Image 1 (cartoon, rainbow, N blue to C red):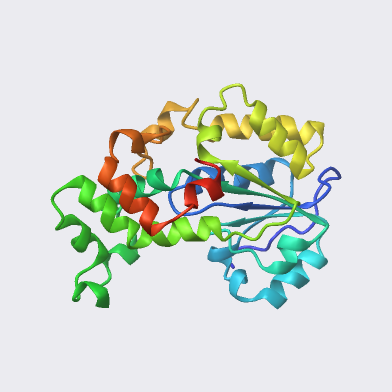
Image 2: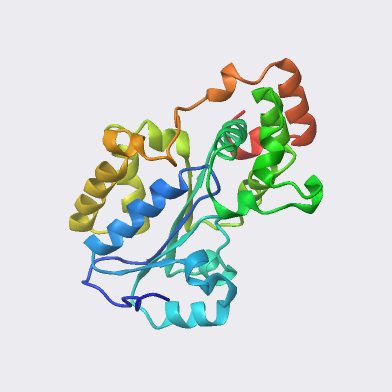
Amino acid sequence: MSKPIRTTGKKGMDYHVCAGTHHKTGTVWMASVFKEMADRVNTGFVHLPESGLRDRPGELETLASNSSHLIFFDTHSRFPSFLLQSERVRGIHVIRHPKDVAISCARYHSFSEEEWLHRPWNGFAGRTYQEAINEIPAFKDRVMFELHNIAGREIREMASFQGESNFMQVKYEDLMQDRSTSLWHDILFFLGFNAAETCEGILTFYNNSIIFNKKIKKKKHVQDGSPAQWTSVFDDSMNRAFEQQFPGMLEKLGYA
């Protein structure tokens, strides 16, 4: 890792904190929030995929056991079972309307410079993922392509999350409309932050949210994050195809 992880901090946090997202559910936003939050409350921030610790569960469990409190972040919510089930852990799992995930994927994958989008895929006759999606002229067809590929994988992963009662499931759409920060306040309370840390957390949310900070909207990764975009993209045939491919998914995720 590039620098040591702080394993102790000032007294306050009652638990280790886990923050999990999925691709196109506010990952960059939440990573920025919780990384800054860790700095503000003087504790360690562990980005599980970037640190490589997700693939070294024994080392990760030792780190958690020997630390007073840490913030663990995972871009795909693939937390090991000892974090999902531990009484020493509180966490959030951020989800998004599956159809909006597909729309966001269809847009972002057409221009992003992320390395994996530019590697040849066997399933696309040697073309890259970006080449494959950009060969599809109609945007609605790109969305359907996503449902059969990366977006579909993300949707299934959202629904298969195995968090216990120590995890709060939070909708991206609710966070995007939380102008009063009342939801965020409730989240921080659930995660075990004290009053002073909660104040820091609200300021952090404010600093890193496209709701309040217009500079963030200019970043290349940030697109239109408005809720319910699917209502103007999905027609009847797309809705039927979605239900056939993901039966009961909207109900399971609370979007029915």
